[in-house]
Image 1 (spheres, one colour):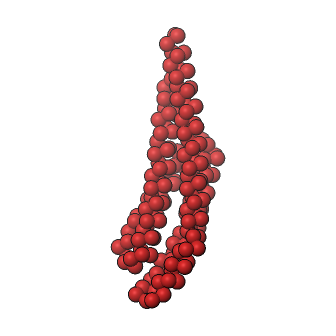
Image 2 (tube, helix red, strand yellow; image 1 turned 90 degrees about the horizontal axis):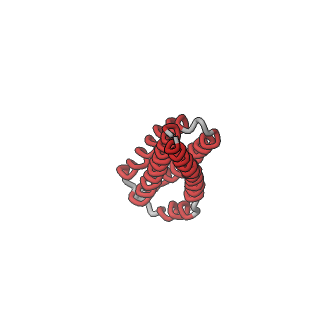
Image 3 (cartoon, one colour; image 1 turned 30 degrees about the vertical axis):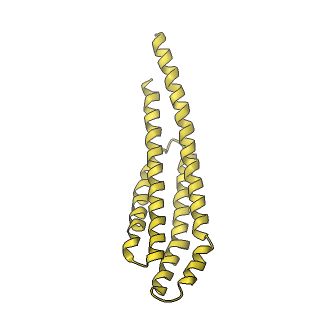
Amino acid sequence: MTHNEEWVSHTHKVIAQANSILAAAVDMETGMRGYLLAGKDNFLAPLIKGEKNIAQLIGPLQKKVSDNPKQVQRLVTLEKLLGQWKNNVVDSNVSLRREISGATTVNDLASIVGQAKGKRYFDKFRSQIDTFINRERNLLDKRKSDYKVSQEKNKQI
């Protein structure tokens, strides 16, 4: 019974950490969008903070789910997707915004953003994190069921 209870607790913690990664990624996206609109460096703070938080969260979460290689691989994929998004979308958009700051070519930036490259990366990221969390919720359901079975067995003893 104690073993099952520990697994239920473990799964709750994993889901909470995955949600923290999602929140940090949303912060990154928010920071980029704010900067693209305003062109002011202070709007990059959520982007920088989110990137730092993700770097601090993914490794420990990989260790926490190390008993589940598929979940570890999903986290590797998440980290890769975020890196690609940052390198291929965020950095180039921020650089372009810096170049055109105050110029009349903001429409160039709007055209690039309108291509939705960043959205495609972020949609893939969201899909991966949703799959990761759903797998953990499935494990949670099983673990809760196992816990109830253990409780019933314990009552019979």
